[in-house]
Length: 381
Image 1 (cartoon, helix red, strand yellow):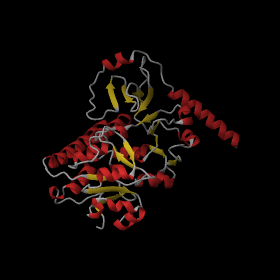
Image 2: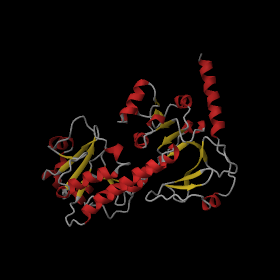
Image 3: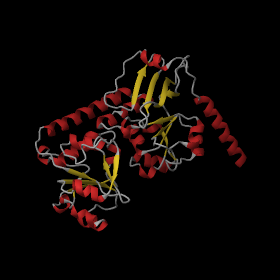
Image 4: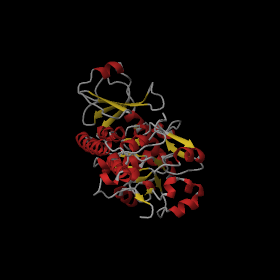
């Protein structure tokens, strides 16, 4: 029996390799991109570009850690049509996808937004995915638990035989034996976008592979409109409270850089961020003393955390007594978001407008008198 299973896996492995093998370049890529048949505009996102042709769609993903090169190029071809001759170099993906594996809750949330969760047949770390349809699928066995995202179960993926795998690349990491299967790996670098609307626009990237482009464009247009309206409401306020974010983790305070996604959201929500002049687009690991020195007098403190019960001033001080030195602690002006039950992380990449309104309300409640916060609530309330 063991011999049969191994033989079957090897057969499937080579079948996948043959079906998904990248075609060699048939023409110069620069020339290919220059002669696109249909215009496609990416409005805010910096991480991907799209060129449309009569027989295929050319999608490129930039390398966020080396802007001189591309991380991936994908050649999307309708699965109902013959493969055209002279395709440019890249990973061929037959669309629309009918069977996919996903590495993260963000991939599942994005596909859920597009109404295509039925194509999700395997997920990594389902315990972190809040979508009921995923939880029910794993429980019933219609969705396979693929294990840890850092080391998925290769045999399960081979048996699943997905059309593609949605994955989140991390600098310095590789996909190990997953790459040997030749299953297309669709790398999403949305988390490296510094513009909140740029990150949200990645829903259009997913739609290219799932045949839901019109829906994605409509959904993104609504998100863009809502985000801009909230930003406009707070733009004329002269009072912009200074804001401190989150807490220490493993001895360091991972503070958003001044050009980061979160820093830009705070500005759009009408706040002043102590590190706004910093040039970093990622997180800065800072010592407690550095944070206290620069943000000790911050008017408001917003904290995301994951615990069975909500944090209080008492539990926060018990966890680390020096927290009590902050002005916002003394003034009882801390707002928390408990991600143990909040959908903050699922909503943030797709609906920054939802998060922005919560933040804008916290900083300027007088401008949103009829709004009830969805994510943040004041300690003690």
